[in-house]
Image (cartoon, rainbow, N blue to C red; front, side, top):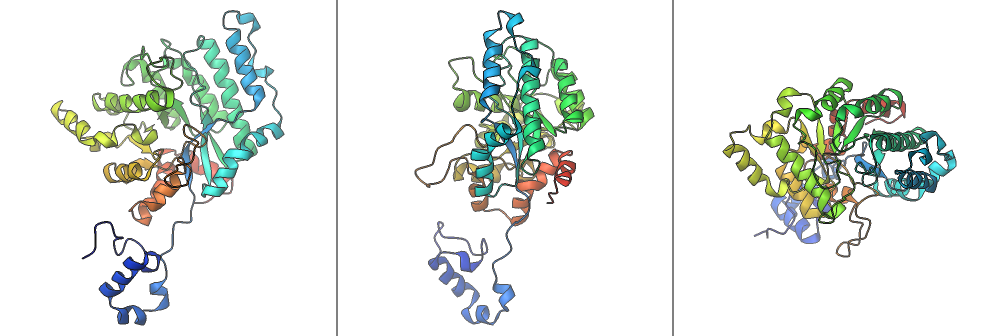
Length: 392
């Protein structure tokens, strides 16, 4: 009898199974039949060799001059006359290349990632700092730097923008910068912070009409948004360990309890970090939706997507078992929240491609997760890939 922990015959070529699994495969198939089969039939099935699109990359290795510009801006919040303008920043092309060559480009090559959808550092968006002018200038600087990276290395990076959000200020204030980034800079999406206050949740839920001007502009431009909080200003919430997951989970529940997607049937939103707590508590959300006479989650998932920024194999396996695979986009958040080596595996926690490779899914599903779903969710991406000479 084959133990539950043994490889399942058919999940991989018999030649790739451990010796015990291979011998049992022989017994099941019949050694004579296997020996008589044509060589091509016994060959290892072709693995996915197309594009691997990381939908969740952040510019966490910014040039020092950019960080110095931001410090000057923050220091001048109480004296606006001393605040730098976006045009004051000076960074050479060589400095831009050097800023990503030692980490992002190196790791993309080592891990088999074709390119990343690249946005400003999430924790650095700092929407709770200063006022609307502060946020706009910082967003312009951040987005222009992303454009520099993507323009210099178009085969490795495609831009996703930061929005100039400010607590209590209508998201309509973000639409001009979003349009500039999409139409002038060639960006394919944006990051939407559901809590610009930094952990105090002072703005209305994402389903409130307060947000409708932004949703209208995103639909008009046909770009999706990744629902991503920024830094935590509330000491109760560790930024990446609590605030990020809180934001992901809270956003999903806001969608469950609202008719947002009836008003915006083509709006597409990605919840990062594997959907926060949602996949682990999928039954809770299904049950809550049922108790509240809300539509089933299957209807919600016409508009909502999760990524694979989950940093261990059981988490990825659960995600892909619970969430429809057409709703999962490959991502690693590299270089981002977790940079260490897992002592249990000897590999980087954020090397999420290893987990997807090891997941018990079909090659067709793997192809969807690696690239197909991203091309569906980000319709403007195909033209960017074609312009860069990349083909799926």
